[in-house]
Length: 170
Image (tube, rainbow, N blue to C red; front, side):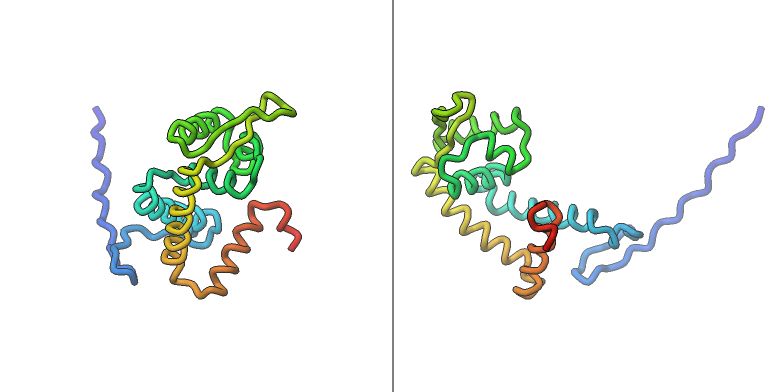
């Protein structure tokens, strides 16, 4: 009978204080160098702030984005909004149904293609969007206060070039 040896006990990692006062337990290795990793971490941070501050108004990020696009694009169809936000059709149906059920938008059949619906904000939806947009702008400025206005504009422009093919040549 062979006896198995116990693996050596792992040594605890040395924890270091970060500049912000938090404790950093892990060395991120190459992750700090990767754009995708940093974009994802920033997105998670922004989403958490949004949900903490704007979520109390009863809006999730996809709902807010949908209301914005409906508000600034009169006569936009449900399919166009879904495409613009990269939301799959079944998910968009539920999202639109929820907004309609809360009295924030109305849907009418598009006269040229009865399979499509035209989306419009209701007065209640327009009022909520106005209030939420003001709060989101303030939140966005506060969270990005670590940048100068010029840096913020550069970051926004660079990120937009990643996902918007029309901006890639610039």
